[in-house]
Amino acid sequence: MDTLFRKHKMLVSQANTTLVREIMKTIAWEKPLVAIRGSRGVGKTTLMRQYVRQQYGVNAGEALYCVLDSMYFANHNLLDLAERFHQMGGKHLFLDEVHRYPTWSREIKEISDLYPDLRITFTGSSLIQILNADADLSRRVLSYTMEGLSFREFLWFYKGIQLPKFTLNEVLGQYDDICHRVNALCHPQQLFEEYLRVGYFPFYDGDEDEYYSRIENVIDFIVGQEMTLFCGVEPANTRKVKALIQFLADSHPYELNVSKLSTRLELNKHTVLSYINSLGRAELLHLLYSDSKTITRLQKPDKIYLHNPNMFYALGYGDKIGTIRECFFVNQVSVNHLVEYGKAQGDFLVDGRITIEVGGKDKSFEQVANIPNSYIFADRMEFAVGKKLPLWMAGMLY
Image (spheres, rainbow, N blue to C red):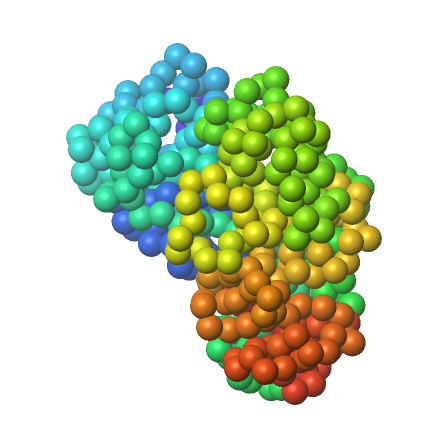
């Protein structure tokens, strides 16, 4: 335990609390069992350490922060740790990266049964299954998903520009007021172009090459470690999964030919669709369907995007601006809304009722002219023109 207490102090003391993500305020940290899930690199570890430092200070006592891939757990288990911590008067156990500990769900369930007054907060990969884990924790756990930075958060984190969140209804109904409010503080289009390149992950330090290298490392880790652990990807096929990501990045979102792709990768169609589905769960891709209510297992998606715009630049496809625009819209809006492929009417259908076209500033209303409740989100605009809204406004929703 002394080893864990020393590591707790060292790691928590490193947490800078100057800038804290707003999700900190929405998490019910006081609940008995809380999960924070998300893709690697979005800031789960930083958030947890910041909370511990703010609420409990840097010394272990009532709280203990542990990383579950620590060497300590090669010879110790969670049950023993929880028992000793509880006997010492511990109140809140923070477990980081639970997916690195094989029996995490069973032991956490047993700990919550044995010590109901001990609160447990844990982080894990977006791929961990709470409902279908070895021990079904779904009725006990309050689960949150952590995303990368929105454009609004990027303005705050990197430019010191603070703006409130706006609902989608506010964006669609009060766009003139919002545009004037944002433009009074900055030139949003210029900053938006920067966000598309380097704004999604909260680890940009001014060096684009280093940033893109870290994104590639994130992709390598998810494919090579997490997908082999959680998705049944054969280690020998991880290179083919990475080739699949590259192929999809270089393809128009409409042009998914599974037969051609399976031949190219030397994999059968079922395996290709399974890998695509897993990449969606891993938050490396966004999969869109024309009718999300009737999706069947391993159904071919109608549109596929990389998960966020920065990935296009990291993988060398920053020239695909049309696809990057659409990727940005899907990435930002799908956090709190259902985004579906719009078929012949518009690019996207949001919440089953709002038709959206995405394009450049010269995009016309021709495709959606006769569709009620339709809008254009256009790049390279700072102010709205009628129902043609600046694309960056989609980044104000969280």
